[in-house]
Structures are given as structure tokens and as C-alpha cells.
Image 1 (cartoon, rainbow, N blue to C red):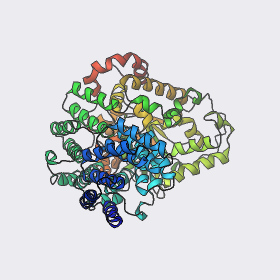
Image 2: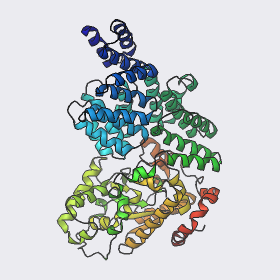
Image 3: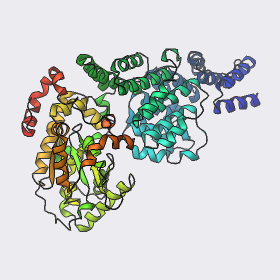
Image 4: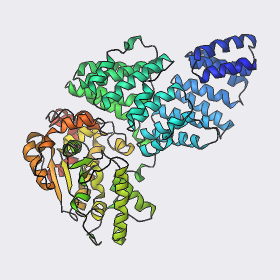
Length: 604
């Protein structure tokens, strides 16, 4: 008996689920009432795809042996896979009461929260599981997935940095690892994993679909299209997860090819499947954008509302968010009282100070960044947290921001610059004579810090009609949990826009020098004049290369902002004034925006 049990476990570990099931059934015929054999059969049935048989066995086992945590854990796994998430949570909690230090149980609770879309709670469970004795590499993969979904890329990278040295993990974990590596910028490693062999048909199809998504993400549309031509008809795919991911990939490519009717159909079919919340949000956004392009404003707004409700904003806000991210600088206690009392210090040479590109979200910052990056004098970092690293350093030293800047000296300024450029070096290598472009829209909330560290740095503030900027933000699936929460309704966005404007006005009056305002509508309608103005501001004689930004962006591949697909298309005015089509939805918030509209010189 033991030899056969060992062979079954080995077959499971090697993803030979059909063999494991056959041997488990043979063993169960010989020992039909043996607890261990029935447990092994239940897991084999689960792995082979018969969840109903597996659940029936496990319900019997938990009833007969209620103090065995393994049975409760296995029951939770099956219920989670069947979408019975509340019951799964109850089963996991019972198992955890019986074995509170089990990394497997904590990991399963984390996977449950991941399916529910509660990414930060998932991160808590999964990261804790990784610290306990007996944790497995696969748990680190899922913990990294939760971290990345929570906008914590740094921890995600740390968790999987040595993945190539790990023993083999499950095929499902490998699919997640491949996709995660691509999202974190390791396209070579991710593609290698997703292009590998998968015994499970559903997982093989999921890996294939994610290869399509990965190619689209780096703007390799022709290659992605070639792959889609070999995809199995989604209607013929039995595995619901694989069918959904296939439909998502087809919808995304259809949208890139401007076949928005087809995209709408693919996304609608995917949303009709009974799948966990984790997967619904991007599908809702895809459907909404397709409807927007088709001019179906009512359907678009319904889909956007569904997208924002798929992850409850109140759940997001309960995760300690007021202390995180640049938006935390909107706290009234972090308003700069000014004027600055610190010594200006030794001015850094022009080429050693970054060019800061800031503005409200969805105001054309990525467009301008790519224009600058196309010029040989500049290199951009694609929204990296250099400013946040300096803020974290101040916090670690117990220096209150921004008031504590007044107590810092030249040595502190040098240290902060070192921290800043160390983070830059993690992303790009600046060649001699090349100037950094630091584009992060909300960096302007740290204007006092920027002016303390880089007194002479040029700052370009991107402007766009507030209604267009706000509407576009509402239409984006932001990863940052705090920003996603702020974008969950138009009224919340309007309130945020007002607070951002007030903070900019308050800080800019103390630091008015070396600022250029770039209006999005003027940049796309008269690029010659506007790029010449930008060139003069930055001391450039020739700005012709900046006109070729779309080709440069396409060659660059990965662009880590929601505008990655727009900037490779060149200049167009399709999104200018789009808010007017949605006036009836924006009308209730126009009174809130009136002071902002007047300040920036826009009409409603």
C-alpha cells in the first residue's frame, strides 16, 4: 500500500494527474473506508478536474473526522475553485483553528482573498505564510502576485528574485510566475516560462493567452495577432478560466485593431462566465472602453460602474492607505507653510538635475515624456519612485515632512540626491551628457522636497481640461489602491481634483521659478509651436526628434503607464473634448469643479 501511495504522490508532484487518479481509484477499491486513501482520492479527483466528486468525499471526511485540519483545508480548496468563496473561507478558518502555524493554510486564505479582489489582505496572509517553516516556492509566487496587484512591485521582486534556482513548482504557479515576471519588466524570463510545456490542457491555453497579452503590452501587435490566429475557438474550451483568459486576449487584440464591436463581444462573453472578482475588473474596463469607442455612452458608464464596484473601495480604504503613496501628502498636516527658510545651497549643473514632468493624472504626462525620451539629450525612467524613496528616507530618520526640511543642510541634500540617483540606477543607465526625465504626475505634491534637493531643476506642469482629465481617470484601471479608490466615483474624483489644485496653488507660490505649463490641447493641435516652446525652456536647439516620438515609443516596447497603447499611435485629437459626450454624467460635479475650471482657464 505504501509503495502505491508514494507513486501517487510522485505522480501528483509531476502534474501527472490522470495517472494519480487512476492509481488512487485502484487503491480506494482495495481500502474503501481508509481515511488516508479517501483523502488521497479526493485530492486526485480535484486535480483531475472532478470537483463535485472531490467535494462529496471531503464533506464526508470532515463530518467523520472534524479534528483533521487537512480535510478542512482540502475542502476549502475545492469550494474556492467552485466559486463558493464564503464556504471556502469558513473551511479554511476551521482548519486554521486546528493548525494555526500552517503556511499552507495561510497561503490558502491568501488565495481566497486574492480571488475576492482583496489584494492587500491576500498579501498579508501570503507573505506571512512565506516566513513560516515548511513554506514552499509556490507560496512566494502567489505572495508576489498579491504584492504586485497591491502596487508593491519592490516586495514582489524580492520574493521571486531567485526563482530560476527553485525546484519545480506546480504548472499553475508557473503560469502565474511567467505573467508576473512580464508585469515586473522581465519579458525574456516571462516569455520563456509561458512558452514552455504544460501537461494540463487548461493551463496550456492560459499560458498561450497570456503570451498574447504580454506581446500586446509591449506593443508587438503583429506578433500577438499571429498568435491569436492559432487560438482554439473559446466556445470549445471546457476550462472556464482558460476560456475567460482566451476571450480577454482576443478582446484586447480586437481593440488594438480598432474592431471595437468584436472587442465588446469578447469581453461580454468573458463576463458571462462565473469567475472570481479578481478577474472581472479588467474585463469590465475592457468592455467599457469598447462601448466608449462605439459611442455607446450609457453602456460604457454602466460597465465602468461595474468595474469600480468589482473591488469595494471601502475595503481598499481599510488597508492603511492614508499612510501610503504620494496622495498621502494631501494630508493637511503635510501642507508646506512656507516660505522656505533653508539655504539654497550650491546649484547643481543643469545636466545633473532631472527634468520633472508632472500634472494631474491623465493630463498628457506620458505623451510629453515620450517626446522628450525620443531626443538624444534625454532618458526617462517610466514612473519610478525616486521621489518616494527620498520621502521614505526622511520618514525613517524621523524628519517631519515638509516642516523638517528647514532643519536640513547641504550634507542632507547630498544624501537625498544620492538616494534619488541610486533608485534611478536600478532602472536605467544614464550615459554621459544625457539628462534624466522624471515623469510621475503626482510628484508635484512633493514640490518643496524637489526644490530643496534640486533647486534649479526644470519642471513642466501638464494641463488638460479638468473634465477630460477626470473622465479619463475614471476610465482607467489604476493599480495603486489609493488612486483606484479615489477614482471609484466621479464625485470623489472631482473632490480629489480640487484638493490637488489647491495644493499646487499653495506650494507653487513659494517655488514659482523654472516652471513651464504645457497645455495638452495645444500640444496635440500645434505641436511645432509647443515643442519649440519646450525646447527653448530646456535649452534645446533642435527638437525635430521629438516629433518622432511614436516610433521611438514603439521601439521602446514596455511603457509602464495606462497610455502605453496611445503613445505609439502618434498625435490624435480623438480624446479631446470627449467629456462633452458624457456631460449628463458630469453635470452633477460641475459645481465642484467650477473654481478649478476658472483657475486653469477652461470653460464648462
